[in-house]
Length: 295
Image 1 (tube, rainbow, N blue to C red):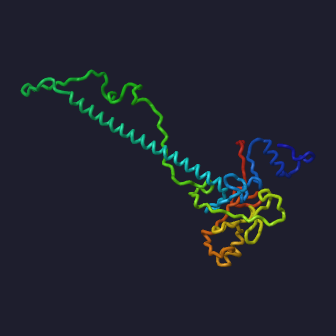
Image 2 (cartoon, rainbow, N blue to C red):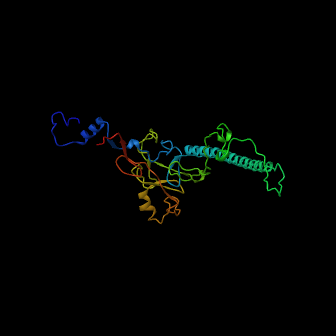
Image 3 (spheres, rainbow, N blue to C red):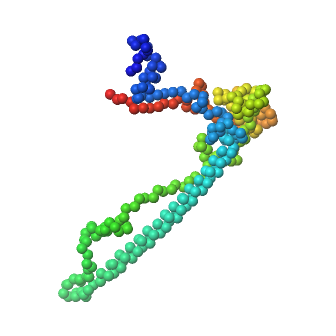
């Protein structure tokens, strides 16, 4: 254990900094840290590219994507499903062919057994008055008993060991969202319209600004710590507080088009990343395990 301090080695206080330093030097135990803001995805970033969206779209589950990225993903998944389906059909054809070969082999074996019994004919006629027994012709064979049922040579194809083929399962024809793992279709993607924040800085691009977007109704600044929703009919992004205090009190009417909204279908909560200071829908703690000393 390291010293508590340069001039106070007998102190009864064991600080967090000293304990963390001792843990790092000891080489065993566990480290637990809090993820910072830089480790979290921004609320307006694509869930695939993790970059701010230029043409954002949202799924019915509230997952935000860049339109080009999610369309490329869906097309690539459809190509993959087509390849897997082709492999599955080829496997079915091979299995059907193997079953036909096994059936043909069983038929040949049945015929061979029948011919073998037919060849065992009586060599001499039976005299009913002498009480003698008929003699049958026997082949030359030095194998008898249970050993006769098994093939004696390991190099015979039937006895050659072979690895079993991996069975290909029938793939699903649906494309699933990489985040929510629910079926996703191109027609279900909803365009999102962010409202740029109102400021006098016209030279700096919107992407370069720290605060980029605001609520389309209340003009409150949007961020990871502000719960936001998307209005399905127009794609406008507003705060959840705006929905509770304005839209619901106005009879669930759209603030711009005056259209009646369905709370479950037309109001889509936007999934957002977390920060290192407030708990949201993301895990913020990370733990690293190392070998521990046991008594």
